[in-house]
Amino acid sequence: MRKKWLLTLSVIMVLVLALAACGNSDKKSSDDNNGAGSASGDDQAATLNVTATNFKFNKKTYKVPANKEITINFKSKEGYHGFEIEGQDVNIQGKGTKTITLKPGTYMVHCSVPCGSGHENMKAKIVAD
Image 1 (cartoon, helix red, strand yellow):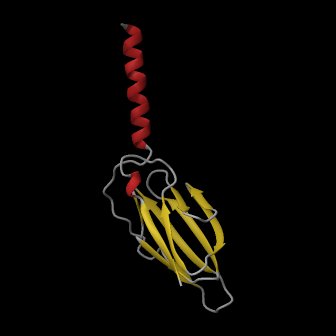
Image 2 (tube, helix red, strand yellow):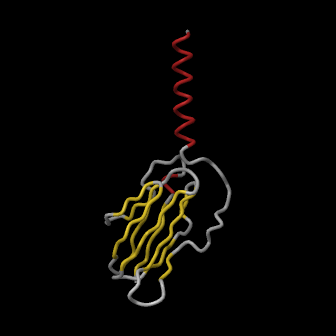
Image 3 (cartoon, one colour):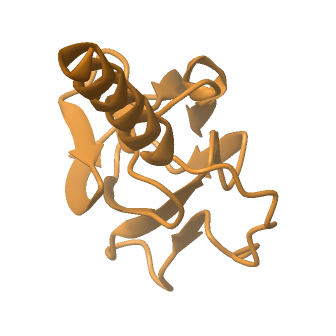
């Protein structure tokens, strides 16, 4: 009986830890300015600031200049998330920076860390033009 109790307790603990990876907060992000911004002048790189909270990115669509260097600054504000651009060599997990150049087009983004029950809805897109 004691072994069954310990096994049940272990399973419950694993489930609690897995669900806690992203949390479940309804708190709104106050980072409305996080997005793409280009520094003044054509020779300077653009910056894309992305913040992930529970089961969403701070924007559904990010606009960046095409054929220019873009520095992506990614952070997980709530929970632990990832930022992956499909078809590109970009997969930042937790927090990090990556510099890339995108050709004109639309690029799909998703969370690359299994973060809980809303993980499959963590999608966005980048429009480079």
